[in-house]
Image 1 (cartoon, rainbow over the protein chains, first blue to last red):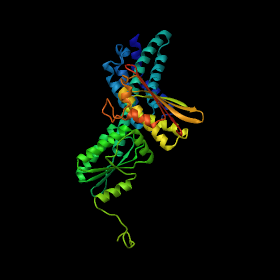
Image 2: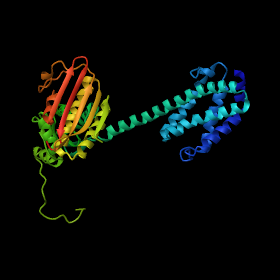
Image 3: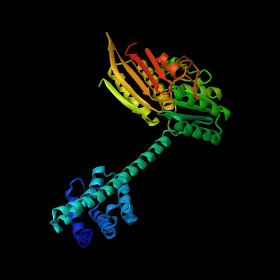
Image 4: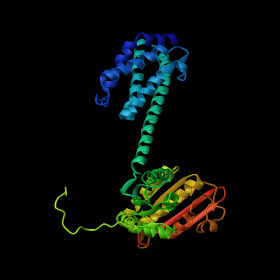
Length: 289
Length: 133
């Protein structure tokens, strides 16, 4: 009786679309904020056409069939774009689940034989459930890509190299200094040393919450690399509790110049460049002078 | 909130775990220095677990003994185990390329330290830090 169901669906494409649209719009979570009704209708129509046109008695039991390539492609595109637009998983999932309801509704109208109806329903359900799973997989992949991109961005944002004076670079490190981070920090720092011809680099760790032996080891690596480039390295921003922890942990930082604050590191750097900051004798009279 | 089990399976799990430990430490009013020591110790052990034991589970518990309150952390992995514990507890010994301060350093940072390991079965490390110890 396969032909029956397929024919039924093919003949009722328009009705399926109407029912589906009704189902989707009845779902009050779907507002026009994220997608316009026209756009939604276009997406839905394309999908209904792709699905019903490619459906035949052989592939109804096989969602992996190449006949459905067009459907999976459409679905993939829709769910990825929805993930990026900030749709919730429920909204994305109900998109395809409400199609299933529309299809089953049509079947119900056409057939009165309970046993036959049950069997056809089961087949159609299985097929659409597979598409639902696919939708979720793609949706999550879209979200993961978003997270990956943000992670990259955070890594970039949090490692700026600042030229504070001629010959002095400062690098405020914020967050945990893991191996990947160290790599970025070191690259940026070494490149900037070459570019600006700086002789002193200040690594400020005020924003590093925990200094364990791995972080310390990574810091020491950055310091040795800086030295190899012929620049001096000062580590600043060592808080009292961090100092105590470092001592107990047994990390030897005695080979490195360390300072409690960025200000004292800067002072030290000025001194070694034989620069001096002092008050002028008379009050400045205006900002332009 | 007196007990929590957290699975640590990848490097990204380290920071959330540390934050969790910190929440507990703040809750029992642990001083800043002890907090930092405990979190650093936790960080060392959790990294060890990831690096040598392929990850495992970490348990955070609030415990009390007489007038003292403290935090007990248990790290369980099913890695290859440690062949020579006394050697692993020496400063500067590492089978990896690290500073070799993880275990001995942690021992110095906490009040109680216990390590059990069986080759081929896994390693369990337990540490206790008292709020004002």
